[in-house]
Structure formats: C-alpha cells, structure tokens
Amino acid sequence: MIIEQIYTGCLAQGAYYLECNGEAAVIDPLRDYQTYIKRAERSGAKLKYIFETHFHADFVSGHLDLARATGAKIVYGPGAKTDYEKYEAKDGEVLPLGQVSIEVLHTPGHTNESTCYLLRDGSGQPKALFTGDTLFIGDVGRPDLSQPGSGITMEDQAGVLFDSLREKVMPLPDDVIVYPAHGAGSACGKKMSRETTDTLGNQKQTNYALRANMTRDEFIKEVTDGLMPPPAYFFENARLNKQGYDSFKQALDQGLQALSPAEFEVAANREEALVLDVRDKTEFVKGFIPNSIFIGLDGSFAPWAGAMIPNLDRPILLVAPKGREEEAVTRLARVGFDRVIGYLDTDMAGWQASGRELDHIETIKAHQLEDHQQANSQATTLDLRKSNEWKGGHLSYAKNHPLDYLNDSMSELDQSQTYYLHCRSGYRSTIAASILKARGFHQLVNIQDKVEDILATEKTATAA
Image (tube, helix red, strand yellow):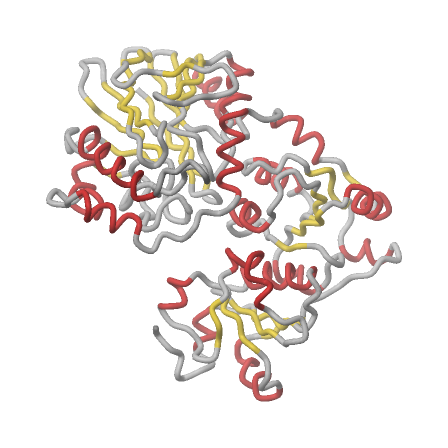
C-alpha cells in the first residue's frame, strides 16, 4: 500500500496519492492534474477514484480534468450536488482499492457535504484518515462557509462539526494517522500546525477542539472566537468546484502568449485588463508599468491573488520573471483565474526602450524611518499585518490596516496624505503600495525590512 502526500506550500494544501495492487486513487487534487497522472504511470497503476472531501473554497480542484483524462470516478460524500457527473457515496459505504478499502464517513460542519475517508487494510483495520477540512493538525475547519443568504449561522455549523468529530472521528483508534487537506498558512482554519500529519491519539491530547471533557457550547465558542471573515474568493471557488470550469489546458494555452510591448499595451486597453506584476518585490519598486499591481511569485502568491483581485473573470496580463510565466499562469488557475491573456515578452528595460514610461515606489530601510518621520511629522504609518500580528508588537504611532481588507477600507484613507507602509517582510506592504498607487495615492513610502528591524527603530514599540 502506497500513501503519498503531495504538498503545495503556496496554498498550504495536501493532496494524496493512494495505490494498492495496481489500482490508484487521488484525494483533493489541484488544478494541474498531470502531476497525478505521471505518478500513476510511474507505477503502472490505473487511477480508479478521485475522492473529494468537500467543495473546496480556497482552490479550484483538478477533479474534472483528471476524470476526463483517466476515466476515474469522481466521488463525493452525501449531500454533494454538482452540475457534472459524479458518484455520491453513502455514509458508511466501503469502496475497494486493490486489497484495501476506503470507508466513507460523512462529517458535516465545515461544509454540509464534508466527508472524511477512512483507509482500512486488507484485514479491515483502520490505518489512515483523510480528513479534508474537518480536522487539521492542531485545529478544525472554519464553520462559516455556508453561502450568504442561506440562513445557516457559523454557530449552527460549529455545533454540527462538534457532533461529527465526536461521533465519527474521535471513536477511531489512536494509532490511525490523520492526513488533513491543509497546514499552517491556510485561511481554512485559525491555529493549524506546521506539521502536516499526526496520529489521532496525539491530536486527542493536543488539539484544543478534541478535548475529551469539552462541552458543545465550549466548542462552539472556541471555534468561532476571533474568526476573521473568509476571503471573498472562497465562495467563487466553491461555486466553480460545484458547477465546473473550463479545462486547465485551455487556461494555460491562453495565458502563455508572449506579447511585445506594443501588443501588451493594446491588449491592456482593449480588454481593460489588470496588469499583474509577479516579479520580486525589490525589482518591482525600482520600476513597473504604471497602474500595475504587484503580487510576487515568491510568497503566498495564489491566496493573495484571490484575496486582492475581486473579479475572477477579469482579463489579466502578466509581467513575470523570464522562465516563470507558466508557473504564474498555473498558480493563478489554481484559485480560479482562468483569463490570463498573455505576458510581456521583455523586461522593464525593454519596456522603457520601446518608448514607454515606468513608475516606481519610494522605498526605504528601517534605519531611515526615524529621520523620515522627523522630516514629515504629519505622515501616517500603516501596519499592513493581520490584527493578531499587530497585537504581538507594533510601533506606537502606527495604525493597523490589514492588507486582507484594503479594498474595502481604502475609503478611510486620504489621497493627499503621506503614508509609510510596512508589514513583516515588505511583501504585503508592496502589494498595498501598488494597489494604492493604482488608485491615485502617490505619497507613499514603502519599508522593505523585517518587522524586527522596523520595531527596533522605536524603543517604545508597543505590545497590545
């Protein structure tokens, strides 16, 4: 029996490849489905099942393309209604895979159709549990992803999740290995560990949500307390996973069109396209195409693209490091951006040599901040980190303005004001600076240093 976790750090997502006696299954595949086909071919195995633990909200699954390419059966648990052909398994149903079997455990709570898959060996003994977003290492799935207007509250869903965990998951043997769909960095939970597997017994001892003496009311309060609103793209990704989408190959072929500066400019104007610059942040601030938005590949690229670009259908033109164009198109497609229409075929020197302008963002180091503040006492410093990071320590004169909600909170800012921007490393502050610049804010100074260096500029850095 083979169990392989295929982990994608950008999305903090774990897909799984299972194989026994020439039959294979994939659980929660990503959009770039060829990875799983090549893995099965390497063993000479036939892909039999594509198991989905639920309608994912943080990425678009690769189940449709994978099924079309292999003939494998898409399997969901009870209550999963789709616009495409799939097999809706019953709670407790057992599906054979070679000499082992997969038992379907319906575990609603994170979403109504959420399902765990229990791997049993040839003698029927439980060996591994693929929990999707029902149970993470150190946490459980957020219960607030019911569609707006459904009338279902997150407290309702949290209560359902409490029952699922205690009735279906916790009674399993302690030596069962837990394989979740996400680890630390995902917005699908609050307190996920950086570990991506564990024994169920250890989780019963260490996971706050599995405390043996925990009451239902305590669970509901702890799971919902401090839960920030989900990124807006979550509901769109869930919709695509239910209804279907165009093929990944189509998105890739369309996106990988090299465009000269003249062609790029024409396409930007004709299509009203968003120019997305995915280079390193230090390169971006030195010179970029006016009104372009920065979200660097060398960071949590796909989640930030989903969070900061409000319309999945908007055409996108890429400015990417040479040789990384396909990576950028692929990672955008993973979160539902299928309308990349090409990329610039030259660098910024080539763009400028064609007679076109560049813009830039003033950038300073942390040690320069004090002098800047003294010279411009009316300026405002914005800390773009999340509120929990802010509470761990911040500049006393800074205002917390989390990047996650910048599109909604921008009306609170004044275009005539000077703003100093910082985050933890300069990645998020550069995203914010690019968005503000494109919206008419021109008095911006970006601080591209580690937060420790920034806080060290003020002896009275405050812990809230």
